[in-house]
Image (spheres, rainbow, N blue to C red):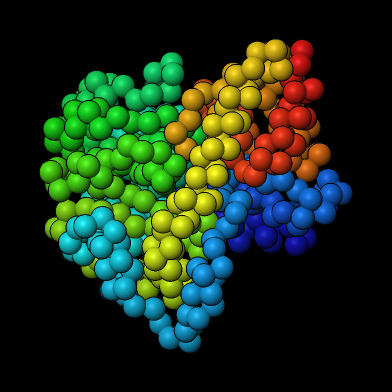
Length: 376
């Protein structure tokens, strides 16, 4: 029958797939349309607080700039306009900046440049690092975080000495914990014989940044993105600040047209309107994250929710009591409220949920349901 023929063809081509990857099972992520169909709630009534997106989206001026991009021509492979705008913002030389299709692309380019036999991260953290290491066939050394989810720099240094890893990737503020890595700890690690990438995807939601150290330590690379603060997650646009020698190689080996025309125009416009965005949607999200955290700290109302202080635009919390984190996640989903549940893949986070900051009414809606769900 057809099934057998299908299986034979898998076996026939499997020998051409590299052995690390043969037999991979692709798990698709359901779209909002599919979720809407499944739970019987219209898409525009679903509350999506599971991906730390900017619910306010980009301002109209940015959308207008995107609409004016000329898509029939290939984009500028040198990324001249955007790199100049970023160099101007940070007061650095343009030869210290590379842009990518999201900071994920930047990380991928760095890995291809270095081919590090081992990469050190500190878990729980952003899942992309283990994904990239696995796909590229590099070993990953996960150094556990402290009880309060902060990084222990001494453990990182111990791992560098033990594994001789040339690359360390740390996120600050960290996703999904919201914890900050202080610059004094970053400096300790930078004194080691390795490259340290600080992934600052959420840096716009806090005040401390590794930018203060840039230029002093050539082994420091700072990755940033337009996904969160500028509300451009769907356009895939990020960048890094790095030593000119790194930048030269990265510009040489990146996909020549890795920044599409819409993304470059949108990012340039977002930088032009950066002050406006920072004082409107970013300020609102920071305030709302604080409000959500404060509300969750009320032991009378939320005896079984234990939030972690966050420097990003989301709050991670431990769930105790009768209903598990999974129960809470599933019940909310049926009601059209999407939050982040980590399951077994989250390791230490099986009992945790993460909720993105949205509008005040979004917080009220999700916490209203959470209060009754976690009362016992």
